Image 1: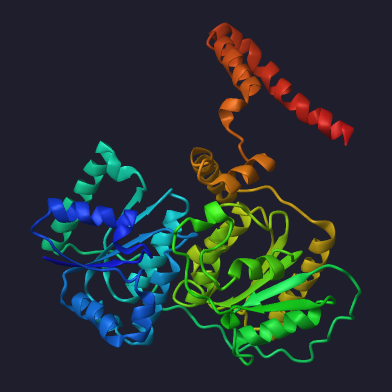
Image 2: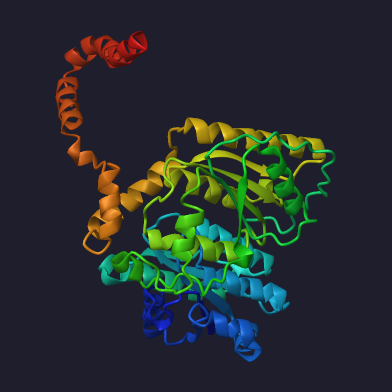
Length: 457
């Protein structure tokens, strides 16, 4: 049984994720693994067609493709996203059709499900048969339970391929394309003096596209000057290498000065608007490079308390995973999400009205600094980060200082008063007689603290 492994980690054979593959190789000698470290060699894949074709030829002749990667900022790394772009650009998607496929990834389980959903949707676009994958913590292979789970996964994978089991589909193949947006007579807002800085980030190069016209309309409707940051013009040297150089030096190892550029042009903004087009269940590999490279900030929200909005061209209503990523990014980073405006409307007037509201909301937000409570998207994500940073505070010293400064170490074991009350009430409630008498008193007692606040304010 031939297995093609596409390793998306920029660390290549030194990837923690790849060690899971090596463990399977040792314990399943009947499986023939052919490994390609495309994450380490993505620049070669871009310029050397023979290197790219070697991967495609292996895929065409295999029984199963394993996508092996670490989770980078809600998704697969930039290098793997770029490789997927090349598959479709070079029309080699036919090589994947009908093949079994599975994902093996490692992370701290911070939004690994959104990474899995993204790649499964891509695999189904490639008409592959997607089997349940293996998402592990970075230390799982060092534990007995982790190794047992990995062996169970290997046995299940071999059995599934050998028996040619049928596979159900999770995502739609065809999404409706939005109609053409042609705004007419959009009045320019009267310019207002002010020191507030609004930045619009995009990778758009086609001013006649829907996204180009939506950007133009938005800028007209904002009475302040809007700084444009076009990612297509930034000379990225490459994607994040997961080298952790920035956790020690505080700067990225690349010499393209992205960190300085980000701090001067983006972190200094009061409000940021992201304008992008949907490509294959994400935005583009350029956007993924941009997000991954922000890791030089570590797990710190460099824009905490600021406002963001999105202008999206494409069928976002059919991309629930992408919407979750956009919303979760805002919550985890403690940003105020103004709106996500798309071109999924039949009426140009309605799209323009939504853009006008986004412009007015941006103006209101930079002046009032609004906040809203977090949902599970933000609370759950921050708890994962909190525990990670506290455990690795010796290495991630800058992150540790940030979490202490902003009181993000909200460990429940430190809430001694609440814990003590719980013990007292729990002890009393064990008595049926007291429980019956206390039921009404408890209801009233719980509400007293809220009533006093309502009366006071």
